[in-house]
Length: 156
Image (tube, one colour):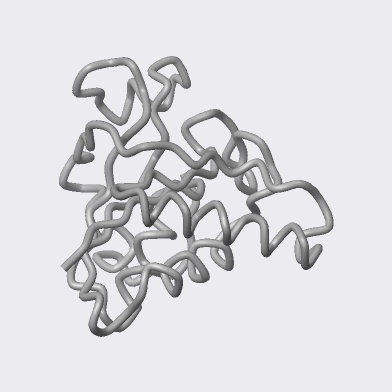
C-alpha cells in the first residue's frame, strides 16, 4: 500500500474520481500546504491559510501505479490555471502534487515534462510539485461528499 496526495480544485470532485479507480483502497479529503495549524473549511475558504483542498489516496501498487494516478489527476482538472478551477478561485483551489517519496517527486516532474512536450494543454502547466506536509482531514460532511448525495460534479 502507498499514499498519494493531490490538489486539483474543489476536493469533492477529485475525490469522487479517485474513489472509482480500481486499486484505490480509500480516499480522504482535507487541507495541506498552509501555515495555519488545524484549519477549518471556513478558514481555508478565506484564502488566507495557504492550504490547498486535497485528496489523499491510499492505493494498492499491485493494482494501480502511481503513474496511472498521475494520469487520472491530469485528466481531472486544468493544470494551466493558477489558483483556479472553473468557477472556484483562490489558492485553496490550486493544482499541486504533494509527493510522499523521492520516486513520486521524480515521476510527477517527468509527467509534467511529458505533458508540456506533447503540448496537450497548449499553455504552461502551473502545477506545484512539493513535499507532503501535514494532512489536515476535512470535516466529516466533506468526506465522500458527492457519493453521499448521488451527485457527479463539484460546485462550492
